[in-house]
Amino acid sequence: MQAAILYGIHDMRVESRPVPKPGKGEVLLKIASVGICGSDVHYYNEGRIGNQIVKEPTIMGHEFSAYIVQSQGGVNEAQEGSLVAVDPAIPCGKCEQCQKGHPNLCPHVKFCGTPPIAGVFSEYASMPAINCFALPEGFSPEEAAMLEPLGVALHSVNLAHLKPGESVAVLGAGPIGLLIGAVARLAGASAVYITEPLAYRREFARHFCANAVFDPGGHSPVGDILSMTEGRGVDVVFEAAGADETPEQAAELVRPGGRLILTGIPKDDRLSFNASNVRQKGLTIRLVRRMAHTYPTSIRFVSKHLIDVKSLITHRLPLGDIGKAMDMLSSYHDGVVKAVITP
Image (cartoon, rainbow, N blue to C red):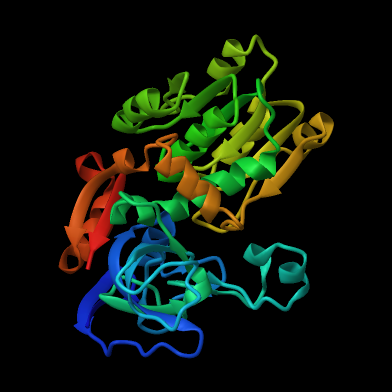
């Protein structure tokens, strides 16, 4: 099979690899569609995310759908040949966090595309049958691949305990930020304010989920949003940009007693706040670690046309053009919002 191998920073090569052989309780999958995540771009540009470092050639990719090639049953009612959405996380199921219902916090988790675990920028992969979710009729491979980022957005909003009528700000209108805004609207947010430096993404956010959008270029958007809320601030801020300045902006935007949810991945593995501001406001701060128990709800959102995940996909490329796709996402070239790969 063909697979895209990351050897190091900006060194992605498409090479032949053996088709994996599924073990006990696993299925062999023919990959249908793979979204390129911001974390994949981090590995491509920096060779690491925090202490997760590319030390040997690795297949990236974890947002995916696939067709079942070979199965011994137990695939959530899916049959061989069926299109399935696939949860990329394989928790141990035995540790304290797994037993308490937090498999996303499992310290022993095997996550597709996180070095040294192989991902799915390839033609085939094997995964546990329990990770595969049957899909309603009419579900497309691209929509199924988008369930993973939608799950991250859903998990972020769940962590915020958002109440109907509360106001929200989202810093960053990449795919995750846009999906957070959409889920927040669906959860009953009275207003969704989004900040984003790229004009084309601001325009997309305006039509997709936002009541108002703001350009942080050249000045802080804090004053603009505080003005919109008559100085009160918003109830919940989701930081989804991973920029150096956005955690502090988020802390300034949220009202006293509000909630701050950190979803973005900072490039330098550091977060910075003004401690007195955070403490005096008595903020609740939560950090997002991937997702947990989101696939059934995400499938319902898409199948009932409550969130249009497919509209985020602006570019579709074959596996051989994955380096081109990574460069495009790194430079935000050609109006890219979401790029998907078809092996």
